[in-house]
Image (cartoon, rainbow, N blue to C red):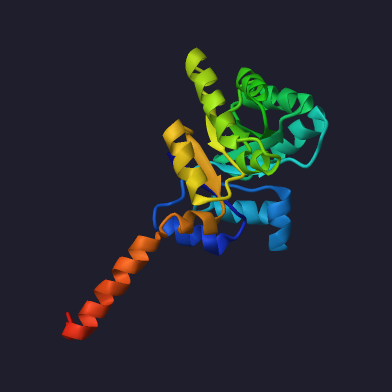
Length: 217
């Protein structure tokens, strides 16, 4: 499974990148707004050290404007994936941009039918939102499983990019289902290393070291 970082915090992305935990990055206007920086500037900086796909989202809602913005964003770097919403206009933009050889991430997916349409339109990535479905008492992981089954049935090359991941458990469950990619905030990725029994075992280990006065250097 590929790990994308859902963030515009350059320092946090660099830290994870150093550890080999970054296969790509996803951003959107809301995330970049929190950084207080220009969308082009921060995206260009991320692309300067992240080799994998970096999703940059359009702000328009009509197809022609999305295409115009998508082309502008794609000029930032070769590894830009233009992110468009899963609307009819978004699918039109996806088709045009993908036909031009640009990577396209179709976002805000909440149904298997939407994912099927995105694959037909040539999307590089489809981004089903797990957490937001959980918020309305639907199981977001069921959607990942449904899309995986449909894509495998017909050999679609569109990659399933599990998004709106809230917990470390979401990550492992998506991996078991077979999502190609997951994107999560830095805090969620770091939380994957946590386990109460690891903490308990380490505490006992350190107590034994102190009692025996063991020193290596």
